[in-house]
Image 1 (spheres, rainbow, N blue to C red):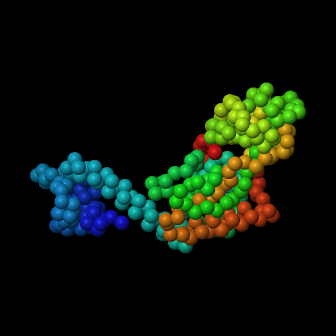
Image 2 (tube, one colour):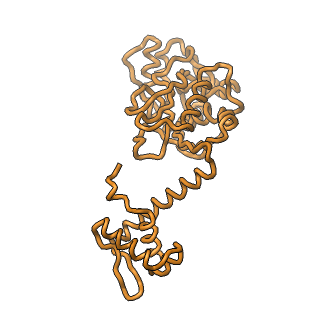
Image 3 (tube, rainbow, N blue to C red):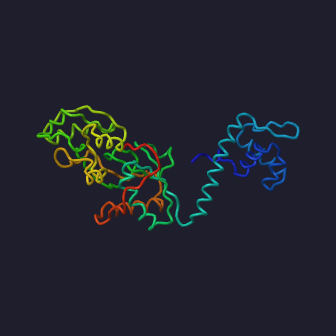
Length: 311
């Protein structure tokens, strides 16, 4: 918490903001339903508290100093945030909003088809989704929680494991038959740029360690999958992302069953914040969805807001 001397009274900040827009103390007084004297005293008190001059008096008008102009721009943002928070509270007094960062492919194929159940059971929670591809600092972002793929290597957070992942070697129908795993090295390989070691791990799983083959890079699973469908090469893709493509025969397994991936999916949230009710509701719901095999997606994969789709 900042020292109180750096937190001026809101009425004084509102007076400064109004004078900046309107140009006179009398106009600011009329807008704020105060006397002109009250506005003047608020501004003098604010200058005294901050220890710097804020106003240049020119005849009947008041003009902010250049430094005060910069200051009031930040003040205006803060006042807007306070007003927005109050509106949100009034609109949803029994719940609250929850800002969740998601991995787009996981969000589209696993989370989105299930979200109707959450909104039906928790109408008091407003859930806002936005894509983030890598761990970030919760202190400098508006997020309350995030979906994380990988190991438990995100510092300063709690973890709730949602799902392990298995990857399957697939290609378009007509891909040449492989008699052993290393035969894959004679064919074009497709890989995600954030998972360049997957083919090496796949080969090691099949008894050929120490190899790290190169291949065409993709930054998102959506385009990687399309590349495989259109015959550009073999790809390692999480099975939960290509159930429809496998069922429709647009992709086929080319060697062996799916193998465990290196990471897993987790819900993470900062360990330094109070446990808010909306986050607690989401966490308990996700835990039930992740552990009950009877709970399946309620429909085909939904479409989320446009954004990058890498993981």
